[in-house]
Length: 398
Image (cartoon, rainbow, N blue to C red; front, top):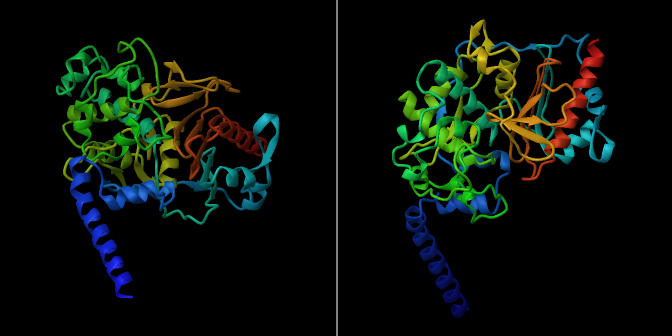
């Protein structure tokens, strides 16, 4: 018995030593704590709660939240009837909406149609109070912040990026702010989500984003001469915006967009660390679904909220196509543009794991869908399902 007790004690001592050594190692490598790394690696929390592993910078709600009109009982569609409708799905078939939400692991679905919040569903047990990460939906929000800064004269899209980030390698002398906005930088940081050793994975978890940026060097093409979707462009864009405005990106978001648009709840932006406090501006705004819906409504209302112009009118046109991602989507200024559009006007913010803020100006509809889906999330099929919802709502109202 004593023999086994000794073995157990040796194992505990060895494990304790390993854990103790892991803290300075992760610090040296500019990585989160071993506890956070273990949680991320083993997916101890769902994707929708992964933000808890990172430091964050908070920002506060509006003192005058934008009111969302709800349908009257006579006008509303009951959740059960709404969920029973069919949506377009794979191979030209249809799928029950409830099945669609289940198959795509949907945590929240909100629909605003003609100014009314007609549905607010939380199929997996979340509530209006639940905080969700935006993932790359943040890129669309950052695009709007850039439009505000341009209107204020804080920067020009033709400015050299090294004017604001002089520590970038000299080879990026020709890189312009507009190249970042439209993903024309050519900087080679792969968007490979299937490996914990990929550059994008390290960019997501590192505690020193400035150090990561200083190490950039590989390019695929000369800036401005091509298009490829790369999150690194929006990390740099956020850093540029912070320098150009002279304040933390989180505060600029709070003062220029979050509060003016009438957000009901406080939120936060994940940062690399409390010490560095560089926002992960390519992703990671943590907020309630209802406020993501208010952001979409701001676009439907041509940048107006509570009778005030929040976003520049010139910025509110459907983004122009600046690149083609695949057979289903083009890209424009932080937004995804469906290439098989029925009316040619809808566009959507998309984040990994199934985060959407879908906007259809023609039908006056915003759909917010927040999920715990996989990295490959049936984006084109999801947009087709959204269009089915829009068609059903429009038919019911006419």
